[in-house]
Amino acid sequence: MLDRVRAGREFGANVYSTLDVLWVLYDRILRVSPATVDDPDRDRFLLSKGHAVAGYYAVLAAKGFIPVDWLDDQGGPASRLGDHPDRLLVPGVEIGSGSLGHGLGLGVGTALGLRAQGLLDPRAYVLVGDAELDEGSNHEAIAYAGATGLANLTAIVVDNSSATHGWPGGAAARFTVNGWTAATVDGHDHDALHTALTGQDNHRPHVVVAAVDTGE
Image (cartoon, rainbow, N blue to C red; front, side, top):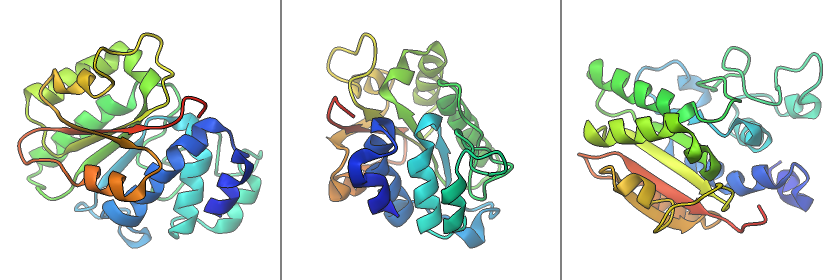
């Protein structure tokens, strides 16, 4: 089914640009499975870039979180799979997302909640688009996570150069100036993504910038 998503980029560039990141997360990084979606010790993944949801659904189906045949009616009037994910309808989805700019703040809250409960192993992972970083809510989330050393938080920025203004030094500089560790890699290179996503330290939040072609 991932090949179906890739073929002809039929679901659009925003989906194609996130698909490899999503696959590496669910195939090689996240400690969560269909059997552990309610386990307090699971990792949490938050898709802030909700309009890229078709690729997300494809990965959830490939990994057994949802039935494959649900994909055939995505967006239909009786479907659980809306044009943005709904945590109340789709197993494994942690947040309902759609309006851009909220996911990273929710990720900060999730990471803080895990820390407050003494859950030291789970991490919160948040996937955002580079244009989302223009939102002021993300500035606050980035600054707060860096200032408090929120080391159980990882952000993944899919950078297709769609931000209005951009940042001197690249998207990673948006985070490192606030105390995050950072890595920038090819957003379609699975091994590079895996290495970057496992490269965090134990004292600071971590960001991976997944750079993709500007046409995506």
